[in-house]
Image (tube, rainbow, N blue to C red; front, side, top):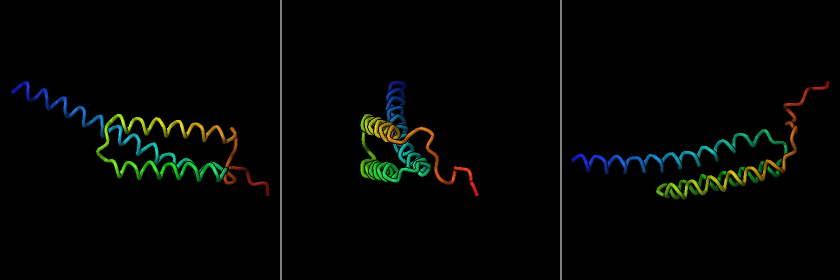
Length: 102
């Protein structure tokens, strides 16, 4: 009985890790969609929104993917985001964030 409980504990741990990986990927995509609104470059906005939507669609279609698959997609998405953010010049502000010179 103790062995059975240990096996269940190990199985539960794996399920929790998979769910956390899935949630991490979803959260990264949702957060990117929200944060991209502050970027004045519309082409970067469009790329990020499209990629984030693609990620969210993949998650919905692959809810039972492995922890490794979720982590791989998250790592790819993070690399994509870093490359997109390199395209945005530091210090760029959105028009609404600039002082009104009237």
